[in-house]
Image (cartoon, rainbow, N blue to C red; front, top):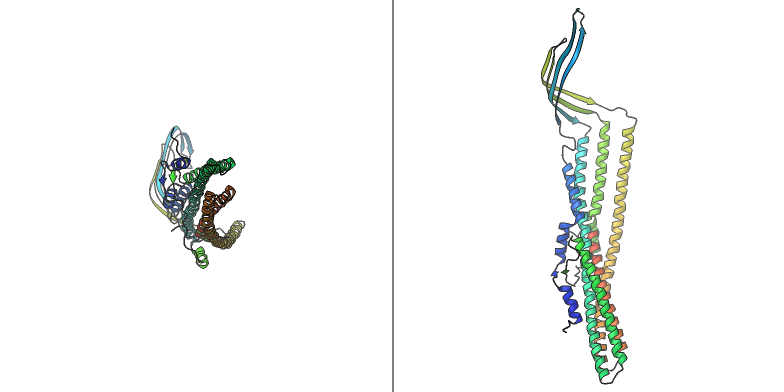
Length: 431
């Protein structure tokens, strides 16, 4: 019976039906399908719809009303002239219809403050969309390069398994010619099986990592795809440039700044309650009242009426004063929240910058360590082939190479995450 070699089986199982997906493609699909972004966009659209002169109270209101009454009554009337009206079954009809216009022409400038507040809320809605996009980008980048990291670890395991297979062949040949004991062969098989078990576990971690990517992209969890196993890094950053970028581009800080402006406009709206208010009123009415008995048998009107209503609240139990005090406290809280967020963001930037520098230094060390471990493994394998060393030395070299490979994969991934965090904090993650 023909048997597929173990490593070939692993490769086939991982690549069958898999299409290469770039980080750009993953980001594009996530931004198109992500639920959090879709919700934020709808919320921003609501804020945009609310930002209108009508919602600010700048435009007049026009109503059309109509009413009608049909009555059948018993009527008894006595007039000063001595005339007496006493009838039953008296019918009366009353119809009124008209157009009514009300326009607030002055409200202490409240309408202008409201309009400015609605503009700020629209801006905050757009910023919230950006915040959700940035958060999604961080998640996608982390999930995508987790897949790449797992692939790097798998590649290291495959290399180690190849060494173990060669080690087993050498041990078997030595045993066949009687130059070594069977324990060398058995130990080589045990060690190789352990590596194959680790590869199976690592493949499971890779599948889980891909499932996480699929969830972010709103794809079926079991959809197969492939990624490059490289984790590219950008050029080193300058701390001063990142600091300057924070104030101008950090979405969370910009959102907090807008919140301060909203609080200011709410104070202006509150102060408007201390001013008089003037409304213009107009209506065009048709009314007709018809009675079968009484002093007036027919009363009909048709025409335009104009007027105004002026009001000024002089005292309302200090509720306006107290409301203004609370609005000023809200402004203070918004300012405190902004200053606190700015301080935390600057602190997080410093930590992220230092971590990124450390991650890059660690990455350089681990790249060198892997090269050294690989050279040491090649030498140990050749020494084992020549019979000048034991399998224990080769096994230690294999372990050292496996650890160096995993540390290097971790170092690359950590450097990418700290780089991504730097970009997010500086507001540069969205190009």
